[in-house]
Image (cartoon, rainbow, N blue to C red; front, side, top):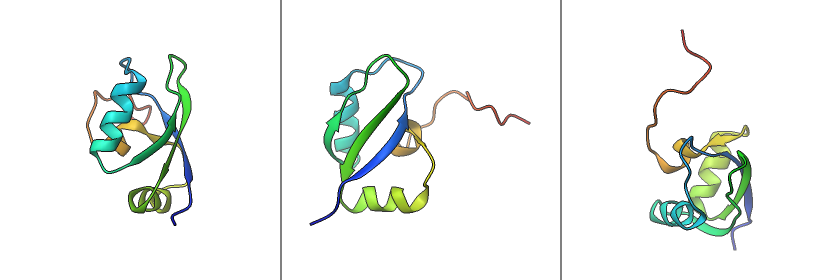
Length: 81
């Protein structure tokens, strides 16, 4: 039985609802046990299973939602050259 992993997630700039968020994560192979996405920026999404393990191994820092969903957004990074 896979252990639950909590990922710190930063919301996209646009306003996704809980339902849309959970649906997109599910479509990408995540098992979403709990998501409390609201208009504040920093939330946790708890997932379990192989993909969650891979993401946990990939990074121990906060993971952007873009990374989790495998989509590209407009560049809002602060690491511009």
